[in-house]
Image (cartoon, rainbow, N blue to C red):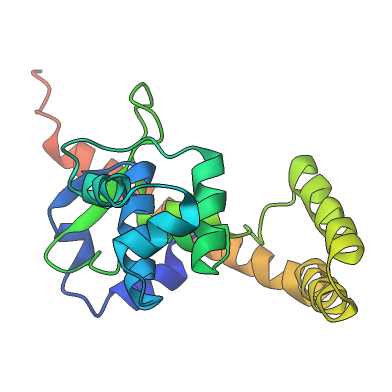
Amino acid sequence: MDDTATGATLGSRAEYSDLSPQNLTVNQVVAWNMTHLRRAAALTQEELGELLGWSKAIVSAAERSWDGKRVRQFTVDDVAAIARALGVPMTALFLPPEDDGDKKRYVLRLTEQDGQILTMTDLMWLALTDNENESPVMNVYRNRLRGAVTTYLDQFWAEEVAGWLRQIDSEEARADRAARLRSRRAALLDVAAELADLAEALEPPSES
């Protein structure tokens, strides 16, 4: 994952990487966005419940699960229904909470067994298309996206997505990605050299 652009944005928020981490689950992220977007839509919990076929109590419990005490396990059906009721794309329910970087930074694990900690940048890459990924499965996804947009949406969308994907696949875009990869490789080599020097400095002198 490329944190370069994100780092530039987060850099204005005092030493983001030094902030105390706070663990989240993706379900808590959905709960936060559900509350935030419901209020933006000027809906009460009861009104949203009517759209979802839920009681006000169920909506309230789902939103309160943000605090982590009793986290609702949202199903894919739930996410689709909430997005439809609020009039937003499903992606909107997976965006990082807006207070990330305000005296804390959020991190998450996708499963309890997963030992890897993900950042909000990682979450953004999961929620949106990774333009640098040229794996076979991503190419299949892009081809299916082209086909689905052409089949189910209007001509405007088909042209917009086709143009966007052409930009991703253009020589200029590939050259830009290659330059960024070279820059990242050079930075990693510099860090490796610094670590080697530090290890050498810390190594106790050998007895002669």
